[in-house]
Image (tube, rainbow, N blue to C red; front, side, top):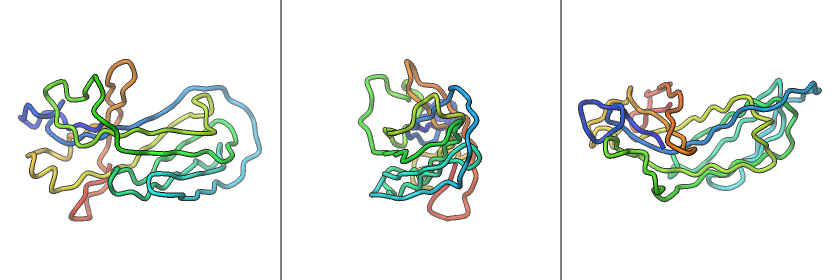
Length: 171
């Protein structure tokens, strides 16, 4: 879930901005492998396959503006073949991200295939939020936070990287 913490607005945790959901991963064992350059194939909306790893991160380009994710970059500890990421809109979970204080932009479900948590060293999720939504909710784009639901909602490190396109802000 992506949320924007308190901009003086009780509608957002830690701000007053958007929410969407994310996934991440980490941990694992290390190994020495020969690396090749990573390859990426976009399958259908919200779905991509990649192979590569170690020296070259896996880059999953998701072509579905409804989910607001543009790329998921996975740095791996091992060589990976045919890893698949699928992202889709999700229903609000039984434990909502807003806790009564945040405005949630979107809930997302991110699933992986042929990629174990133990293979992952870092995940970077690139997402956008419509400027019109931020404005309509009187939210500060600098306070948007992506959250991940484990046993409870955890804030993920979130940094704005681009707002040069008038319709969207990119994190």
